[in-house]
Amino acid sequence: MAEFLTANDKRTHYCGTLRKENIGENVTVFGWVQRRRDLGGLIFVDLRDRTGIIQLAFDDNTDKAVFEKASSLRSEFVVMAEGKVRVRSSINTEIPTGEIEIEVDVLKILGEAETPPFEIINDSNANEE
Image (cartoon, rainbow, N blue to C red; front, side):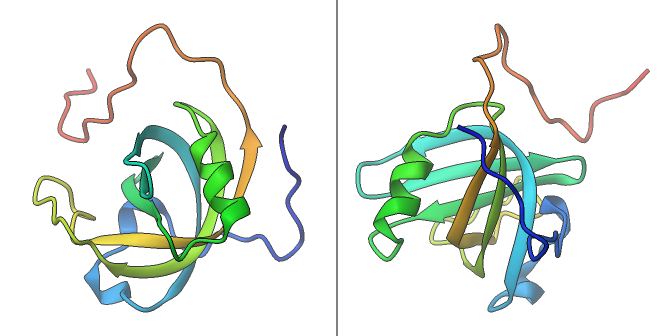
């Protein structure tokens, strides 16, 4: 079920613009769920917008209601996530945001989507011709 935004729900950064210089900052991002990885007590979500991908992290410090909402996410859901930028435990050198992740405090599902019949790939190096 989609949630509504309030006047305070404003984007502070685009997903692909966050870097290690933002560690410790509280940020709000909007985007599409690219992929969700559920490791039991840990959930990682790759959130995509027009600038790139950022990893959202949900763990044992996450509020139970937020964690349950994260476990319901599927590919191409539209969400708003608010939280603190922190160092990633497993650095990914293949993406510009690979050194950081967002420890999510607030998660809103703005739109649900049917599972697409094919995987949507975000390749910023692809030729657009």
